[in-house]
Length: 125
Image 1: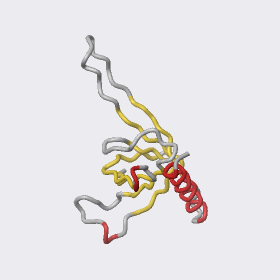
Image 2: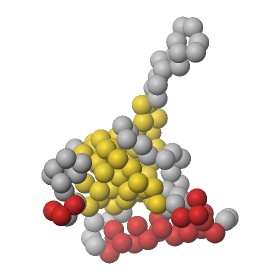
Image 3: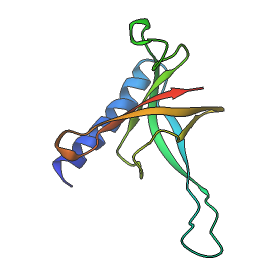
């Protein structure tokens, strides 16, 4: 296991520990991605969806972070562990936590040394 992979695993464990310590408990979510149709073959193959389980914590944006255009009232910040996640989240994906589904507005991946540690998602309900 490389040092970067080991650190990513430790970040995931820290997310779980922090969520447990605050009483929210670690959240398990599902990222859903719509795959485009394959137009290279005839007849074209319709696209489908893929689902990817993830570990995360949700938090609200501070009032100072909301500008009303990029970050709107009601938007949430989701910190998603990169360890164990098969994809890099992207705008247009959907994040489901419990019975609530959010659209992914933007993604910032923290990856010092080229190894993703976690993804910070701006999500909108």
